[in-house]
Length: 248
Image (cartoon, rainbow, N blue to C red; front, side, top):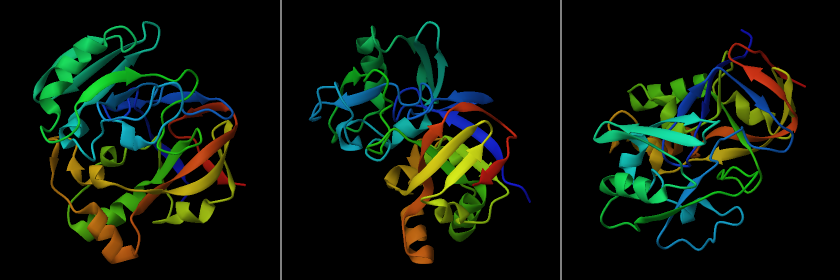
């Protein structure tokens, strides 16, 4: 079976909602456009927001599971984001200008024993990916199915906050691509490294509650806690649902 692109997701605000796309135009050396364009620094963060910083500086689902139930929709022209959550009213706001409105909205979703969200940061031209280099993430639905079977429950791709989900690959096949180039649609990607997973993947994105030991299952069954790979865009171009993947 030919590997094809089944899902595209972007996350306009790191750790705060996902949005499905039908197509995207990638640029060389950049993240997926508008993916993690903003991030929410917490009150203990050691970043001034002028450059990339590790994920420990930001509010995210590993520490605040309720955040995993947020869905997002970006208006690119207006640079506004609409967030929805099962326990909160919908909000539409401009992250660059209306951070206080967002902070009031998200406060009830943050655990009392964790550092509170303090400000929104944006690094021009650099999505705040977990990788130190501007990356896009590639994941296989077959790998997710294997993990779901090991746990005994269907796991949503939203738990893993990836960009590109492929169908038609073998379980864990994507790990074999490290150091190789791929053609996806019109773009070329170089696979750099595996994605190590965190406690956020144990959270149900419908409820914002932890309900699966994803890390334990990965470790026990396969001896690692990885799922998916990070890649660098080495040649830009349009990528759309249904596009085939070729290993070069």
